[in-house]
Length: 284
Image 1 (cartoon, rainbow, N blue to C red):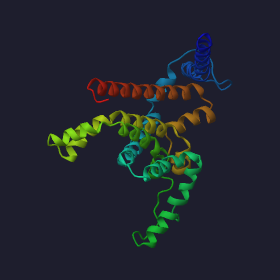
Image 2 (cartoon, rainbow, N blue to C red):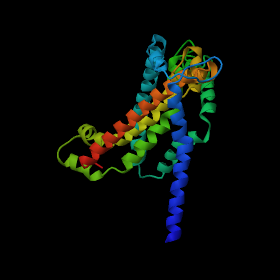
Image 3 (cartoon, rainbow, N blue to C red):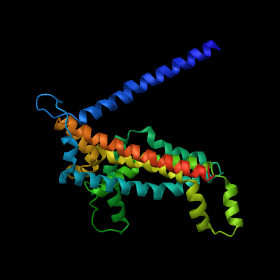
Image 4 (cartoon, helix red, strand yellow):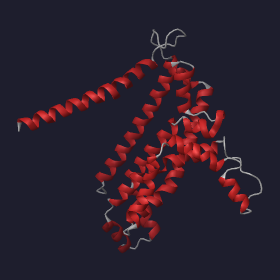
């Protein structure tokens, strides 16, 4: 018994030490850096200041944040529209094809997202597979100009992040109590009403989880806008990268990172609120 308690306490100490050294301490340093001043000689210097956060009110940074929210929101909405039916189909499937479809969702994780982003260039460029195929079928008569546009960035984000929308929704759908669906049909509800008033509320925690897992990476993945969007597609992730590595303005880069972290915390609080609400209503 003493050995079990010693192992438990040791494991907890190791876990908390790991979290402190590689999560809490770096995050604390980022927050502290966001309140320091920028120096051409050193990365950081005193005195403490709020100018780094005040600079984010500049029109340039506001446009970048607005554009990032729009592109990330568009990619998240597309992932939800595409991922929800696919996740629901897989979760409710009883045939031997279920494991194969799950494998198709997981396979992209076996390859680096950077490599997959480069592979998209061969598909969406002017003389790529997509334009050549559509021209061969007579659907279009001129090559599509998708590469180095915001559309290409959205395509790349959806392509890389769609599994993060499918998996949490699929897990949530698998836990559905089918008796509630049958009860809705017995009470006279049609398929659409059952889907809107029963299935959607029951799977809302999975939807919120998928939105969080897609929206935040879509805001911060800097290499996808670099590869597919070109120099004109600068999102929040590119802004942080440029401030930390190019401009060497660590305080401003830390301020942007802190704002993104606060956005993450807000989304997590929304998830907790939605989950608690469904539990209070007896849906989970």
